[in-house]
Amino acid sequence: MKKKKNTEIGFNKRGQSLVVVGYHKQFSLIQLFFGLMNGALMFNAAFLKSCGLNATQVGGFISIASLIGMFAPMVWGMVSDKYKTVKRIVYICLCCMLVVYLPIPFYSKLVVGSLSLAPVFIIAQAAFSGAPEAMITAWIMQTQRQHPEIQYGFIRMFFTGAFALSNFMYMFIIEKTSYNAIFIGYATFALLIMLLLTRYPDAKPSDTGRPKSFKDMHVERIFKNRFLIIYVIFMVFACIPTSSLGLFTPYLIESIGGNASLLGGMIALRSVCAVPMLYFSNRFVRKLGPRNTLLIGSSLLCISQVVFAFCRTMPQAFANCALMGVGLGIMMPSEVSFVNEQAPDGLIATCQTVCGTVYSIAGILCSFLGGIVVDSLGIRNYYQIVVCLTAAAILFFFISTLILMKKQKAHQA
Image (cartoon, rainbow, N blue to C red; front, side, top):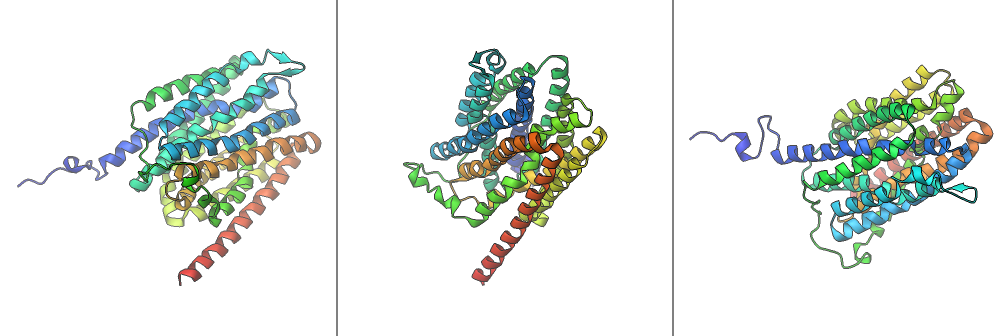
């Protein structure tokens, strides 16, 4: 009797599960389009600056948007876990973005009193812009629990590569046209994502029962996990370097004689340099553990802020963005793996969105307080302050998690 081929029993010629290969293709394609779409959001602060707002005003409006973006994904995550759906939440949020975000260039011409309506709608879009990506991440994590062979770093690599490409694209388009291009670009890729998602079934929840109410979900389980609480506190400050690149780097660029439109190239270079690290991240995380890789990645980001504080030329600034990319490529899969390890059953989407709020909190600190610091003390002093905050957060995370792990081992013994 002839031996059956691998492909007949669910494996390809390389011995890989066809189910896992199929999920890799599905999520990689979705992440590719999300990267192309989300690249536009990086230019929100630059758009407000082009409307004539100073650093404090830009920081104030972006901090309010970040505050909304902090709570909105949590609500969407709870709704997703309650009704066991990811796709419908993504559809709803993207449709709302089309209504709110696309017409912002038109709103910039409308003035109520002395205030343009553009900043108002930049704030409003924050209620919907963060949830779709968080929902897709939760979808990947739910699937990974059923198929541990799925590599998040490999999938995220497509988002990062597309994100880099979109930033290069917007950099040249904005220079030739105007910032209006980012809104048209976002809307175009949002429509393509909605069409793409029709090809795939919705996420399969880890628990099949439907809670009768939000109370029955016992969301408080997330906040009783000390590792997650420490993680949130740590990441609030560790994320500041990432938030700074889109917000205040234009001021650094101008201080060394560059053109602010080069921001797109810097963001793109950062993303390109993150791709190799994302490709090998699964090996790093499995060998060293998500805690240790988080510490390594955040340390590299902290070093990058030291370099920015003393940067004097554009080549130095671009080289530093490459260093940030390496750190970010290590951190992104480590964040998701750490949260996924600690997430309570039935609350993966809620846990990912709750922990994802660290970027919004960092954005608030960075944009509001950072804008005041930049206006009063200058961009270089701002980076020196960021170095101190990030270094303190790294030390806190290292010591706190070490103490908790020793307590766990003592309790198990």
